[in-house]
Image (tube, rainbow, N blue to C red):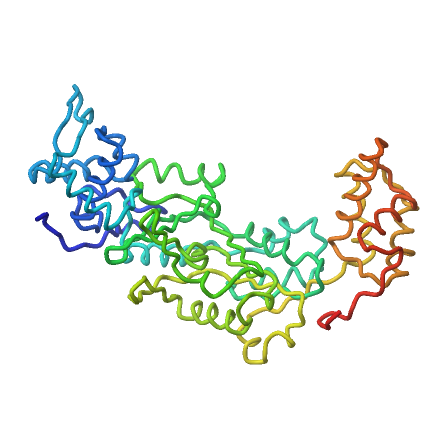
Length: 450
């Protein structure tokens, strides 16, 4: 039988570093020798003879760690050297006959082949350190980010204070007011970079954390700032340097999506969104339209935020906790008091209204959309849009309309092979195509059913 070692902590006490340092031995990884041996054996079983540098790339483990494990495998007649070149790392390994039998059994039990995981203990420590070290937002940074977004000074101050303090935000207002776009723009205010592990090990199970669609690479500016520190040390390749994530959930959200998702084909679990959002921003859009009650959803996330941890469970019922260090943003077109009771609303730090634009800002936004879309602008036509179409129908000056109207003008012009121009005629045509009538009925009072 292969020996099983007791895992040790893989933490390294360099608080200024983003990425943990590279483990120099099997013990430093925090993983059992058995787990590393199984990962190596399964990788060789699938790929056949394999070079040591290739194995390093596949498993994200250093050559020193792999050599230690492979020496053990050779001694146990699980693997053997298939070919050796002139350099120390120019070595190919293959499985023995007995090794292939063992690797097949390990593959049947857990088909995961991928980057070696980090321990839950190491993950907790890194997330907590990154949460404490997160740079705080200042007023100038917020003003620069939202300079062209036509937000009122009061709304900007509320957003800034909420982001500065890391409090939960509820954006509320009529549909089309720009809440969803604004919520995602808040992610650009998150400062600094974080380390995200490819995967975690919980007992004998693997939980994938890194998601290339959500965990984006740092900007060149971040990399320039980090390079002097990173050049002085070798980092653990099991971790990826990323921007702080922005994870958005919509009306399709159901309770089961907040749990670990077993992936039997790959032999692991897929992380729920709240785990992927650690040290970032979690957005719940269209609150009140999910397949679970808004109060239940708010309570689950709020409680996890207050405790700074959330509970997850493996198949079979084993429960464990993971860090919950993220900022929450909810967005809804329903009236807050109709959606949540007073107790639930108190758990939300900032309730921020996002409504219609004033006339001046609406006109400015419309002009910008015309320039951006290459539509010839006409001031008289814009007055007709505001004073006749909007005022006559009672439709508010929402931020979504300029892009929609200008887009329709471009559609018609392209179809007819004509230059796109803003005019009373093209506005009437676009307006009718959007609202299915020349003069739509007034919009319902915010928060009431249509």
